[in-house]
Image (cartoon, rainbow, N blue to C red; front, side):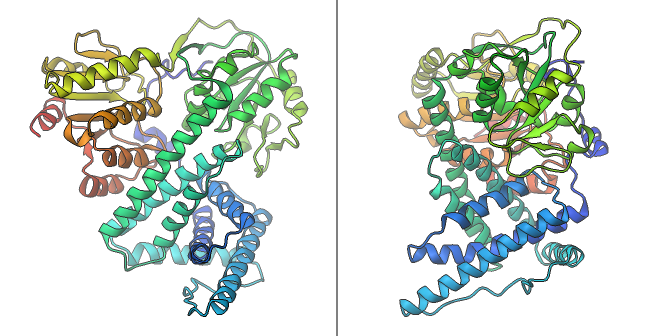
Length: 535
């Protein structure tokens, strides 16, 4: 069975909720709260140390690893969690001690943060869960709805930045600026005195830091693997033994391609980050990279079940799936859940043997080819043309439709929207093909990078704040909240968001973004078009 992104119908809210695709069990939520408490307290002292010019690389790495566990919803067993807590407690003690000594040396009064709880050396998982539950409940009782939602937005930002930092680390690039931006977010969570305006300002600053990380990741990948190109990718598997590579670390995709290039095993990518690796020329040289499989990372439960081979999970992909596929799930991550085989020192032989022992694809699939990426030179010329026309007032309003490919879920909405759109307006559509004089279809499949590049070119020539530009986001993902804040910060007049799975983005959080950041929720083509044209 081939779960192609285009062959399946979009799942509805009820399906996600009933299948528990994003749910977190209460014990895990309590443990995550404890990790967050350690990180918040630690961030306070690390920022104090920064003011003295002191920094600790080991602690820095430990903080990123701990946040990456939160981002991936890692389900720690008692020993794994104990090891992490002892590590964070030791880091906290070391940071406090160093801060105290530096204050004495510099004759400065030391200001200590009131501890959330007594950090005992005696470890009891039941007590830890109770502490986590207690502070989670207190936070939800003491905070207003708006404060809770701002807290959640900061968590989204922190996790998103951590994911990008992990990618940057794989290329040995510096990430200090973003690391301290994460510490600022964590330390902001310590304070109950920050005004909404102050927190919003910190969020916007952190979103800009995330945007810089996105650019660094993209630029670095192009330096290593070549300039991105528009590529036709097969979404239909061919007969043979197979390995699926998922997650965010494309250096590991390269490593597995090297390890299997002379073996009788085909390699497929999974998830949007891996899909975009196909647009980098270096990967075109690997004949054993034969295509892409499945929908995206959020659909791992179904995609992995349908894949008849071995699966390599690189960073950021632990979603309560490991217990279902024991024996053919592998990871290069520093943390391997129960049932997942840890790859040591890039020795992929266990993974390759598991693939050779698996059934593999035995039935010929109907050919399914889709274009990924975009023709950069052509689109750059088109963008300059659009900018010139907008400056001459020949285009009254410019719309970006899609951002994320949506598989036709909103086809009826946008068919009507395009039909109503005045001729002196223009749309760039990533969501669906429409052949009209004032509509440019870009078959890039998935690309926030594409939108960022275009918006930056607009700002180079004329501030977006002076132009009428609206963006329609047609599918939610883990980066949606952060990117919306960035688009608004860059000067986009209107951003419309489709209905999101509530367990991915809380509806109350969206309402806070509507109030504080001017986000719009998708309604009807008539109303939404009228709103954009009336401003």
